[in-house]
Image (tube, rainbow, N blue to C red; front, top):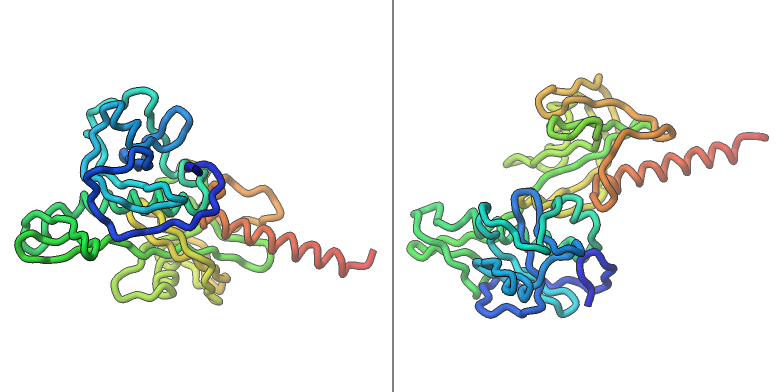
Amino acid sequence: MNLPGQADTHTPLFPKPATVAQPTAAGIVVLKRDREVVVDSDGALPTIAVCHALGIPLREIILAAEIGGVPCYSVQPPPPEMELPPPLQTTVLRAFLNRQSSAWRKVIIRALELATWRNEHRFCGCCGALMQLAPADGSLRCTRCGFESFPILSPAIIVRITRGDHEILLGRNRTFTPPFFSNFAGFVESGETYEDAIRRELQEEVGVEVTNIRYFGSQNWPFPHTLLAAFTAEYASGEVRPDGEEIAEAAWFDVRSPLPPIPQPGSISRAMIDDFLVHSKQQTARIDRQTPS
């Protein structure tokens, strides 16, 4: 059985969210506390059996996914004042996700997002009555007026801006620990396309125009329920001016020289930076081959 942190070749199965009265003892439990996740002494997610043995209250257990025959459950976290009994402890969620295989990352993120969705939709937004999970379609349904809520995803963009074959524009968000730099990201506003959001965010945050916007890939990000659509773009015009509100610093970096601290492997932001590093090296090698010795 493959557990988080190990290689996995299985394709996750995402059944419709359903409340489980008697979960499988060997099933994996995803418990989030703020921006941390509960793990055991080996850094793995605990099982239902371990949680029961340690007296961890598991509320509103939902089957989130299955992978390699192992069920993964989404649950509401224990009260914040409850101390975790050894060997359970917490670890930073962002770093934990970056250590997982692609398949397990998807499973864990789905479990986290379902827990957030359940917690944020306890009561109906139309009439205020209680919401209950409806197994027929996997929605949360109002017990009074019948209003339905399905799992939430918030679309966002993340974009890599380059100039020529060797320069990349990176910024430091005010919430980042200095001197950490990354690509630029933001949520898509109502009525916008992804391309609209890219142009607006870059104008607002650093005052630049871009061209040749191209799709790169996507990644779920459970902070709390974001779907990141990643794009690459080329610099067109404008002087780099950080807005001072979201972006504290922004600058062009030549990737042939050492970069400042950047996102860890596992994130799509890092994948885009690494992709440009490969491009830059290939261009340098091509020029070297063409230059007479």
